Structure formats: C-alpha cells, structure tokens
Image 1 (cartoon, rainbow, N blue to C red):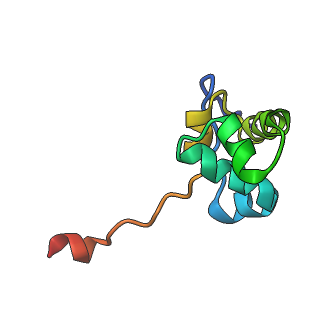
Image 2 (spheres, rainbow, N blue to C red):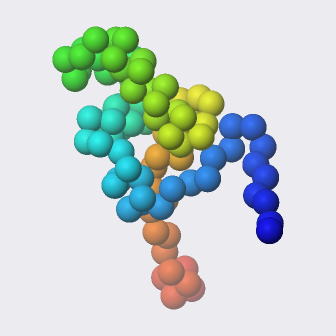
Length: 91
C-alpha cells in the first residue's frame, strides 16, 4: 500500500465540485472574503456575525482544507481556471 506524504501546510487540493459540495454557503462566503484579504472583523461586519463566529469558521475551514494559514486556505479553496488550449497558444 502506497502512502502519500506532504510537507507541513501542504494540502490536497479538492476538486471544484468536491469543495462546493462540502462547504456550506456561509463558509463559502467567508472563503471568498478571505481570498480578497478581509480580516475576521471585516468579514463579521459584512455578514452580520460575531467575530468569534468568523474565527471558528476560519479554524474549521483551515482544518477541512488541511492548511495552516489564510493564504494557503484561499489558494486551496480557489478552483484553478482552465488555461488556453495548445491551438490558441500556437496562434
């Protein structure tokens, strides 16, 4: 049986469908606001929630995505857009 090793803070990137299904709408909104650089206090004000609630959401999201900071969380939760195909690049 093969085992998979990762360095500290490195996450398995969920597929677009997987992370949309696993993360409730409120958590997705928190992820979106983290991705644009909002603080917990700013997120709480925008969503009308207590800062402690946002702190708990962020902690749960960090654990879910297996990362140890907000930047990695934003990267792990953002689907990678499809790039141009070879014909487009060839001109």
